[in-house]
Image (cartoon, rainbow, N blue to C red):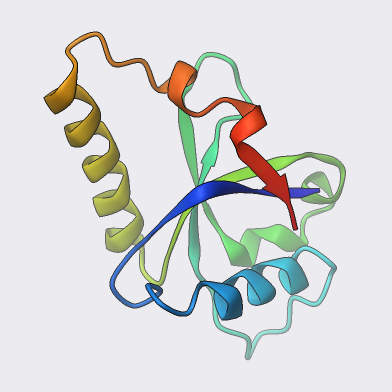
Length: 115
């Protein structure tokens, strides 16, 4: 199942059109991965407890693994560079305001809502 962060981070291309991009991501998760559909990059909470985040291309969502796992999406971008910029912005803002910044306490699963 897909869960969306309550204050979804976006790049300049996605900003203002979040609903459209969410719809595309949700369709991708339902085995509608057609080659002519556009792909996007997602910043998600890591499924591995050792890591903080993962960057996932929506082209990968046709794998059966994603059908059975929960994805907690923090940000969405059109290109890989955009999602890296989102990650940089999150970390820079967090450590800029508080040196004891811990992303695990900020991005708790109760701040996400289902599609």
